[in-house]
Length: 402
Image 1 (cartoon, rainbow, N blue to C red):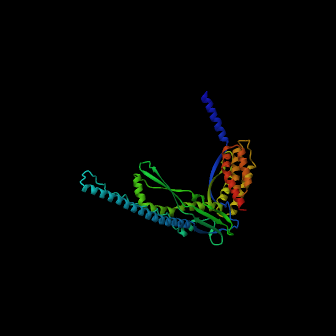
Image 2 (cartoon, rainbow, N blue to C red):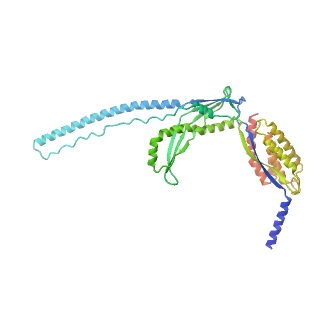
Image 3 (cartoon, helix red, strand yellow):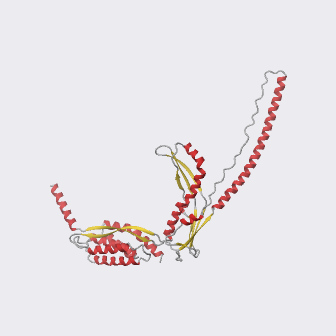
C-alpha cells in the first residue's frame, strides 16, 4: 500500500513539473562607471597632490630632548665622579689610619694584632648615555605623489588639491608567539598616521582628518627562530634596517586605503558586477519574446562602462523594459499552466527592476521588486532583498550628482 501511495505521489509531482515552466537563470557579467558619493561641487575633474612633513618638528623635538638629556647626563656624571673621588679619599684616609695603628702595634710586639682588610673602593659610577631618539626617516616625495589616484580625474593644476601630512612613524609592541611546528615567531606592530586634506578647486574643505586606516597599527610577522635568544641576536644585527624598511613600506597599505576612499567619494571608478536575468523554456509555450528582451537587457548592461551618460545602454534597456511590460500584459498568476504564470511573472518583475536601476528610475525599480516579493515566490523575493541595498546606494549616488 505504501509503495502505491509513493508511486502516485511521484506521478502527480512529475505531472505538475511537466506542466510548469522551466525558468532559466542567465548570469550576466558587466562593468559600469560608479558615480561619486560626495562629488566636488565645482565639478572639477583634475587634482594635484602635495606632501607635508609634520614629523620634522617631532624629529627636532626629539633631538632637542636628546641634546638636553646628554647635557644633564654629563653634569650628573661629573657630580657622581666627584662624589666617588671624595669617597675614595675618605676610604683611603681611613685605611691608612688603620694601617698606621696596626704598624705601631706590630712594632710594639703585639703578635695578635689583625691586619686591616685591603681597601675596597667600589665601582666608579658610570651613568650611561640616554638612548638615541628614533627619528622618522625623510620621505621621497615623487613615489608617494604617484601612488595617489582618482579614477576619471587628471593630475593637473587648477583643480582639487590633496595634501598628505605625515605625522611621524610610531613603533608598536613586539609580541612573541610559538610557531605550530616548534620555534618562535614575533609579531611587530608599527604605524605612520597621515592627515589627509582634500579641497575643492575653490579651496572649500571636502575632507580634513587623520586618515583612519593610517592611525591603526600594521603588523609584521618575522621568520621562525629556534629560541628567543636567536631572535635577540638577529634583532641586535637587524633592528635599524628593519625599521627603515617598515618606514618605506608602511605607506603602501595606507595609499591603497586613501585611493579607495577618493574613488568612492569623489571619483568615477569602473566596477564589475554579476547579476541574474531570467528567461523561460517549455515545450508547450513559445518564449522567443522573453529571449529577445533578455538580449536587449544584456546588450544594454554591456554598454554601461562606455560612458557616464549611459546613452547607448539606456536605448537597449528601454527596449527591454518595453518588451517585458508587453509580456507582463499576459500575466495570469492564478493559472500555473498559463504562459506567464506566477513564477514567470515574478522573474520578469526582477528583470525589469534590474533594467530600471540603470535607467535611473529607482522608484519604479523598487516597485517592481516589491511586486516580485508580494507574489511569494521565495527565489525572486531573495533576488529583491539582495538587490535593494545596491539600488539604494545607486539612488543616493545619483541624487548627489544632480
